[in-house]
Length: 284
Image 1 (cartoon, rainbow, N blue to C red):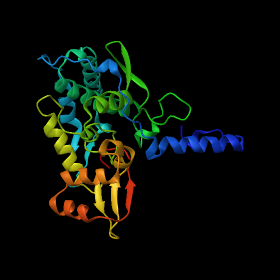
Image 2 (image 1 turned 60 degrees about the vertical axis):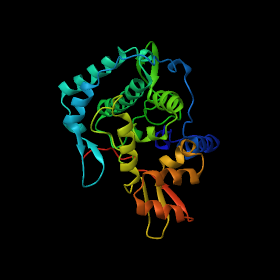
Image 3 (image 1 turned 120 degrees about the horizontal axis):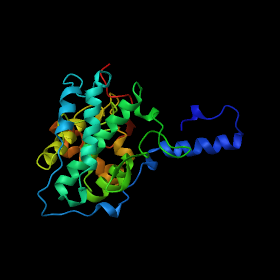
Image 4 (image 1 turned 90 degrees about the vertical axis):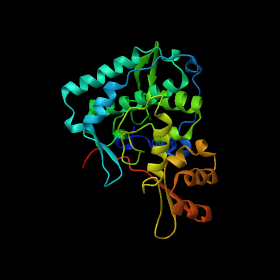
């Protein structure tokens, strides 16, 4: 809940308490930490089974705009037909029918990334038109913001939210900071939604591509005219995944930046600012 939704006449003490809680919720330090859900550690290393992501691929092919001029991939939400909304629903049904704990690790990672991204897109379509995903306040709790804590689907008898997928499954099981370049929050400031589904075969390639594309784009990392380093707030909110220090973040950035930017990062000793654009990732 944002402050603009609070009743007009409220006691001043409650108002101060509310401001404090909202501030905690939206600060970088309050970002969810990896919190393993042991239920999803199960997997079958010998399994050759796979989930079918072809419907998701068809949807992306029809509505994702890879904008080479801006460097930001956009979704044509306004143009999605009723038939293709049904296609997205059918894909969700396909994924819910998969016994994911019986897959091997590579198949599982692709499964959860694609599920996260397709669910996020469905949430936007269900509430469209909307200016930002942060305006879709369907999460439980008085001070919750956005859709991330809402239980959206059921997998193997468990009700699951977007936060569950990202922070209780993907991050703690794989412990790969490139996951932040794979899961998409439907915002301009977010790393690009990839134009093809993740699969066991292409996940490594897409994770590296996502990291390179984001870090080499101004919304990921750039130097301002006064030599301040301006980074995406992702590196503040989830610093724990990048070594737990700003130095660890800079080392990560250097790994995927172009050579000129990487060299400048090595010499950098100035101030760092963080920013993020929560505007919806659609053509303007």
